[in-house]
Image 1 (cartoon, helix red, strand yellow):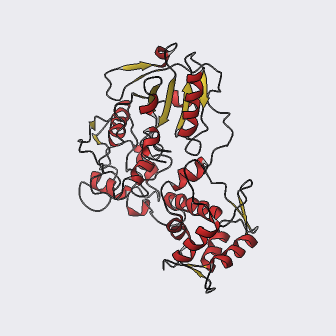
Image 2 (spheres, chains in turn blue, cyan; image 1 turned 90 degrees about the horizontal axis):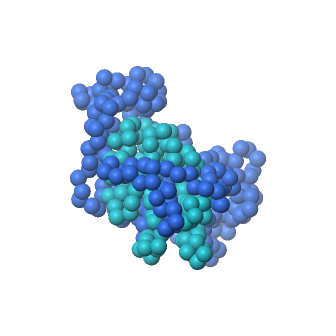
Image 3 (cartoon, chains in turn purple, red; image 1 turned 180 degrees about the vertical axis):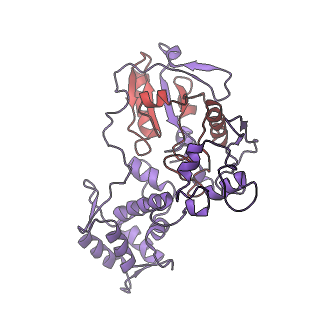
Length: 278
Length: 119
């Protein structure tokens, strides 16, 4: 989704905007504004400025490891103790690299990437649009079809050629919010590689694709592509059309004003854009 | 869209709890375009984070407010992690987007705006 469509990208206000900025690293910004410092309960937060940190652990280490021993002890962590406990994945009383698995199926990022890989698998290997299911027989047939030289390995070229022949790329306006929010501007082949290329050789053996399938199919030869955290499709939550909007009076980010929803009644419609940076 | 309708429609960003703070419920960050942030623990911290967000996404001219730490408004509108609404001139909900991120569809909001302005 293009930033200029609304001025706000899809899902977690920053996510796709950051993806769309070519070469922009997380935490950096094209703007030169100094990151504001907010007073916190215990230590000032330098917000939006991850410096050179490329991972959550690097960030925490840089911020809290006062004695430079590569770990963060409770005394060094200057925030809420409950948050420390939440971060201490192995519950050993200190924060270390072991608490921040960046790879592996069980890491949060691993699950996020797996979901994206499943989305690509479904889109390009003919998942049923209504049920969101991909049947093993269908997948096996498609693998054979894609494998132009019948060497049981898919390359980027074979994937691209088959995609051109069989599928229309996801376009704005065509795809559901699901596809757009999960794929953004990402090309499908790298996403699928990331999810399924077990030996990391940049090609997908049919066996790797099938292994990825079986890792996610509950053993019933049918892959359900309903994402783990996908909310209900129906919009029964919130305030229904026709109902009075819940009034609120909230502060501006700078704190120098407060805005009341009711103040707009009778003059202009109000588009409410709910979201956060991440 | 804001450039097209900004005179006739008030756009208001309502800044919510971070969806993917590194010490939150759904930690992401550092890859796939996701910023690395710690979860704001005070209203002041959340306000500062909102300022960063509006600045880094070049949204600053658009009005924004920040939800209280108890997430009262986000909860009332079932808006987490993100969602779009249009409130009509009569103070009633004219459009309720489906829950985000999957239902966050600016195209739908634009259609709703057009319908509302035509009334």
